[in-house]
Image (cartoon, rainbow over all chains, first blue to last red; front, side, top):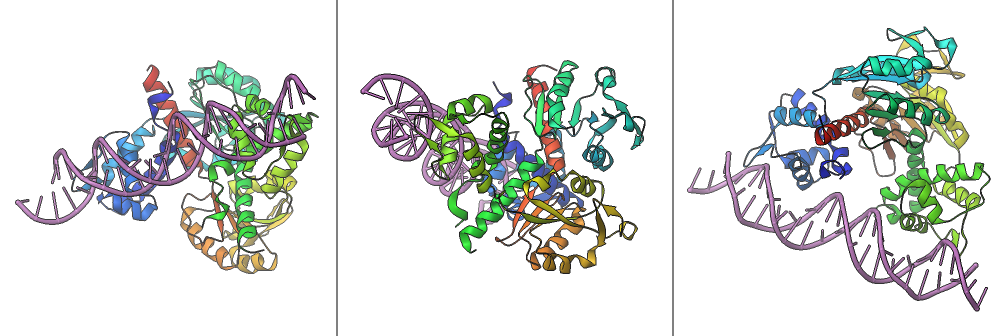
Length: 214
Length: 214
DNA sequence: TAGATTGTTAATCGATTAACAATC
DNA sequence: TAGATTGTTAATCGATTAACAATC
């Protein structure tokens, strides 16, 4: 029942293929074989071919893959041929950083607004957008056909805000709050749990030490 | 040869266990069974027991697990009983956000310095630290026993800076630059590729639509 | 055509789940 | 003791790798 039956393991690798193919393209390289990609990316050629063939036959036997074509196809698979209206909820350090970063615009993620519940921030301009109060969130999402909300708020508000967003028909939540969100199956959540990531790092640092020396 | 033989799949789940156990602890709950945790966390009880038993028998038959004890043990496994000296390289929006965020201090990650190659930023104070020029990086890492470097710089500098850090004996790199780093096996890298994460989100948004309606 | 490399099937490996004996 | 729940072994499932026939 879960969409299409392509595993998240495969999906998780697509952006990396996309990045490497983009680099090859920028270098003016026209074709690449799974073996060459394998050498560059340090994954097996077999996995590369299997991954691509989940989505169709992008290559030509005896030749390999056309870089630009494959790049385009993977971009389409990832939905990068479309634009997405995006808002940021939480105008703290991280929210502002993401708003300003927005290299994302290049990929079709259009920054449409930023919200906070701190009145001291209302009206402050971030990347040409005034910070709006949370009470305007619902109507804004509806009226501006917002697809994606970025949650950079404390975890104790995140659950509640997520519910509100779901009610207004949001389709994706990019969740930086350190809490698991429960949403219906037609709403996608992608978590970025920074502290979890940092803990994995210390685990690996430690484990290396205790195992090899120290 | 790879350390200890505990899979990254298991390690990736540890921070989440740690978080839920912390919450139970804060609620004053003393014991929990794998089945109860299973209900809360939406993973199988079997997986929970398997995961924990990679590191030893933390429970008691017929009783379950003591929340506080288990919380502490997982913390130790993750290396949170130790402190780590950390610097941030790149004082742009994201670097500043992470410096200020530093809820991390609570977990033993001590913010020791921040670097940038933009002279306009030198001397600016971020969280009581002056932004230092990159040319001071090497000596700083050595002299202050820095364990972890956070890379929030553009990808074209990241590879080079990583090499420098490796030379000075860094043990972990928390990499926000959109590039894969090649380091020796005694240096751990944890990648946070934000744009990859966002692409996974759009993939899933799209996939749902095309598969169910639209 | 001969050579190369894909697409795809089959084999292997690893991770998850189920089952149950050990034991608190 | 009886009941509960772990620790652990065995079974299943899924993902990765290897192999090779199809074909450009």
